[in-house]
Image 1 (cartoon, rainbow, N blue to C red):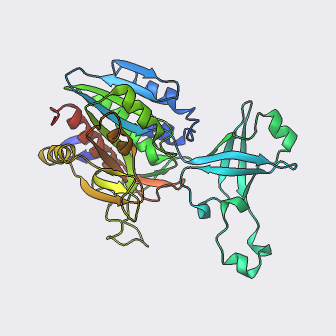
Image 2: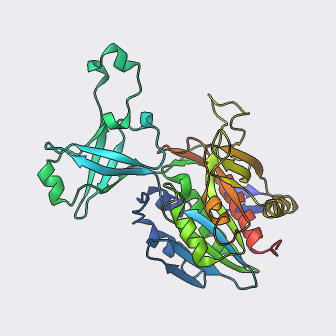
Length: 358
């Protein structure tokens, strides 16, 4: 429980936990659909799902349509080869740094049985001196399940089988939580809670998109289906308030509110990302300031969100992004603040309940 002014705000931490701990890499967002639908039951007018797994939740009526997107997929692995002894080689789905992979516990989603395993590599004791100084790359790693090749095949494990990481969510001190897939299950949580609370002035379509981590694919197809007047993505962003990061490189901090993204994209040029629509961006800033909701402004080098895909759809859709600060993004232990979640929910509710700027 947190206090804000005279109000006492309570977040549904059990829902956040279920979202974080659910399994669903890009293209196999299998566990998320029912959790999302259960979380929204009785709070929206319509829930539909397309053939790719994108989930659409509608609420409100009006002349304008606002599409709010949060992606349901998480970074993970996919089976590439099984050798004669049963050791599995893998490819990566999404951006994962090789150095965080060794000794991670994983779950292999065989068609007939889910199989736990661990990522192995050569022990440091038997490495040559020059090897010890080098990063072990993922192509030198493998998954050990203890099973033979024949057993794995009988479980329905084959080339293309998805692999997720085994991590539980834990509450830390000072209203922080740590868990896997907060990118972007935290955004899914915010969107569910905002849809539950809001009484929209216009038609709002919340979209829980698939395959964001491999190219913003779900948002691209969803924007064509929804045909919105305005697009907003809810995602996570890099919080740099910890050692080994300078403030100028990563000025966003936990607990200081969601970020309103000005621009994002590649580190050298901001290419391939999004420059947020200034009218939508200023609308969000004015809503935050008039309602005394903490927020941060951000230019993010090195990544982008579903807003980039929405913005480029149809003949162009004015779009922006709200991001939740997160430490250790694209690891399997991402740290976020409950306060930032609540403030992001509140700002999104205000946007849903306000007149649009177009």
